[in-house]
Image (cartoon, rainbow, N blue to C red):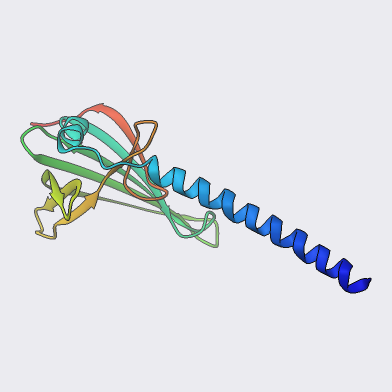
Length: 155
């Protein structure tokens, strides 16, 4: 009788496990399907002559580094980037830093994925693939927030 009870409990646990795997699999596949790669025209219209604020955190919540990056995308293909970081120390102090970067930007297709190519004046270019979520927001990486701040300030 004891073996039958153990078998019944094991059988119930396996049903629950299978159901959880099904739910997780369904949710994950729906999330992946909700994410598309926008067209070159969509990306160009989104970035051209816009000022965007990108925020994200590296590290732990309490002692991590918070990044605030303001980027101005000018219609002539140039960009200006103004970055700030804030990091809390164990002693409760804040370490702040800021930097600026300038260069050119292009919306391109690389390996069948549309994205943005940054070519800073220091020559260290970087490509970032971009995705559009079901609600229309752009997605660059997990944890990165993109907020439109209005028109870019260009000369």
